[in-house]
Length: 293
Ligand code: G1P
Image 1 (tube, rainbow, N blue to C red):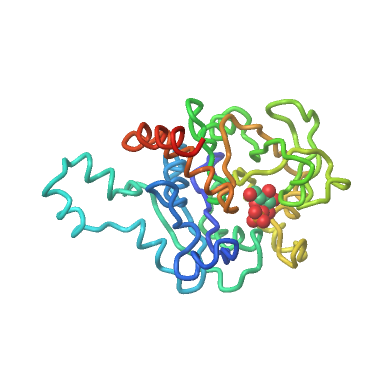
Image 2: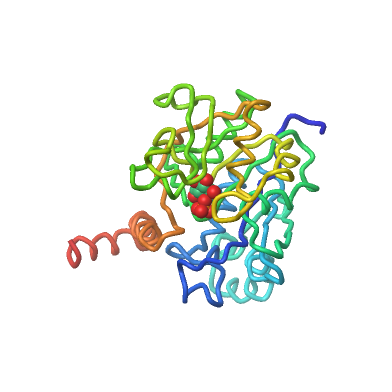
């Protein structure tokens, strides 16, 4: 392990997407749009803005549609160029700058988030790497993307970090829950982390959102992690086992998170993003206030 720097981000994208059936029967859930962009593109833009140089997509066996989304389409560009400016064509077709290396790794069995992350191990040469879960769409607004905020934190503290937010009692069962040295601080060292505990067993109400900066040494910890909640190899369990060796902070990010892994959260994201869309925002907001509210 050489440099103390952060260049690689992993996008686990091999889940079954059962909550969105039948929409996800033939279409990956990561490609479901929020207004006019697929979720995974928001993720890619957040990662590129934060300065990542390598994105590793963990995809299902034989899965090609995500790679297709991020590939160049000269024919489409040529067609659009007849009626649109170069800037517009770029905005419509250039989904990831060519300077960013994209790699695709297949997860042949759904063995869990920990296992998905572990599959990327041979591509990580630095002391830390990041993970972004595309279900969690975060609008950082004027504060910048959540990963940009966490990258700033990393530059200062040079240690791991996990994005967290306060969740309701009824929601602890949906998240990893952390206990920190100071639960009300914006940044605080994590003492323990538990995957999807009941409210009675949860060590706090700080829930993990899908933004992680982790020490690369966690890869060998994952190898020895037993199957946990849901019979899967949980990233949370490997993080818990690494906390004695490596400092990982909980970071209460600035911005609004939409749980696009749920139908309600996905609908809320569509409404929020449509309202602030340059092209549609005014008309949509008008319609919303006249027709719906
Ligand atoms: C995963 C993690 C969980 C985290 C959540 C955030 O769960 O295992 O710790 O809080 O993402 O979205 P999943 O939503 O994949 O069940």
